[in-house]
Length: 411
Ligand code: PMP
Image (cartoon, rainbow, N blue to C red; front, side, top):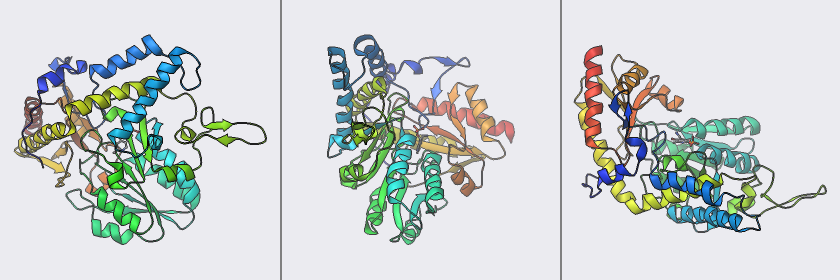
């Protein structure tokens, strides 16, 4: 864990997030639900307003000035994402509704075309439901099999067991980069090279990693990478899928409609080039354009500085909460993003969430869309506090105070 102290001026950063400056239940808001969605800086909020006030227009086919401006701004985001994840070519970046949509796209296209009876798909015990259910649906349709990488008690993947699962039957390995429920950062480089050694492709779910970790899809040699803008200080309703050019070109289209075609006739239709082949219909223009501001924002602040600050918060939260009798942690991996998942002996996570909410502290409780992971730990759910660049140690003090009070009250 990086314990380097940070040079970031957190007060100045907080000023850029208008939502943080309010009271909830009569107390200053403490927002610790960042793994569910991050808050948005003013530049992102203003970009949405500016788009609708200034250049709202449908893109690509317009022969007028506003359409040109909207198209240019829209495509500028694609270029920024390419740089953000270090893709080789801008055409390898496909806009989606988010991580879930990206995974479903791969299941419906790559999956339907290249996975058949007797083939195997490998996922891990800690996957979000969105990286389990599409594969179960595909397996059911195709007669393929889902294999699951087990974990140790700290919430880390058992890599030897993973390697033992791989064979020439494995067609796809679909794993999360950083777990939303535990914070575990998985060794994806090793996962990818092991999968490639048996000829399998790899999809990485980057929903939780992009706002904390540097992503280099070329260095990773990953085949598919998906994420959601709303987890990276951007708007809801949009995300992106990266895929290697050759794979995207070989894959059949996803949805049919406008934009994804070259020519349409009743005798036969020809499809557009990538990325448009996978972008049927009018896209989420405003949110795509606003996401560019989020990427600029995060790049300006710098991921290294963000990570240093978040790691400091993570270590501090762990120290504070572990001093409280009755607190149990779930997920104590060596390598983690800023997520603390915990419970209090004898208290339902939902009750903890309610009592913290009364103190203005927003955490998430429940299974975090990872029911198989909860089954692994033999619990119904956890309380999850997830930190972002705008959070402070003072806020963690409030969380620890609240948790200590609940633990005492319920003892
Ligand atoms: N995977 C992970 C690890 C997540 O944390 C989430 C969101 N909680 C998703 C997938 C799904 O993302 P979205 O709801 O934005 O599609």
